[in-house]
Length: 81
Image (tube, rainbow, N blue to C red; front, side):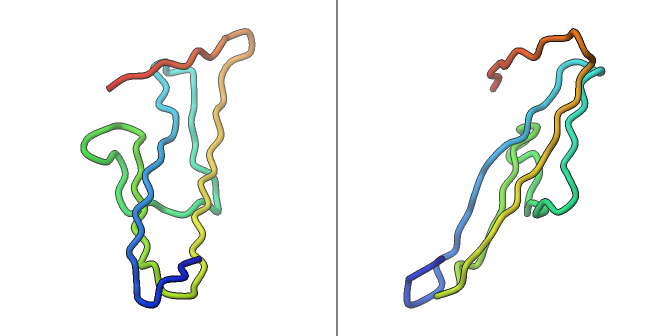
């Protein structure tokens, strides 16, 4: 909720996992707020939402996704640029 007297634009950046293995599936779920931009600055899986920041109004982003992978396989996080 913005408590500013005038509009104060909001930008939110978040990401979803990007699988390196074709057997791993990442799916954005129904009900998720569509991002303003996907793959921000060419970075796969990075999302940007832009909101107006209207005074006295609550803004909500729903960021839902699922990750599915074959049983017996281990998921290992890694950071890439």
